[in-house]
Length: 145
Image 1 (cartoon, rainbow, N blue to C red):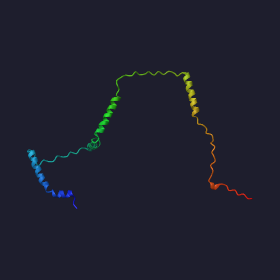
Image 2: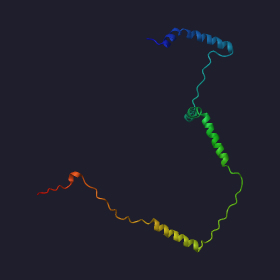
Image 3: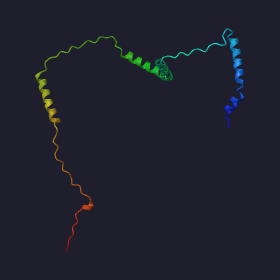
Image 4: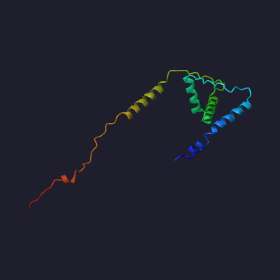
């Protein structure tokens, strides 16, 4: 059984040549100086890298233009906020002086206390409660009277 599409194409197949003739006359009237037998434009093949870049641009960036523009705007805001303001902060001079004897004594004390707390404690042997075995293994006693 034919589909409706096939039926329509068969019915109007002969109209294709008539439509081509009408198109030719309309183009000749619109562009009187144009040649009828103009050569089709030659397709120039770009290098592989450029074609890959074009495909990536069309597939990755064009459909999501709004998202990419938003991300770029966010990055610009971040960069502007992180730019230095031009104020010069005075550098603090670090003067190293020998530590006091009292500070050294306190640090030694702290170190000794820390060593006492961190020392591994010897665990006392844990007394395990005896777990009874299966009931079938209980000793059976027989008493004779």
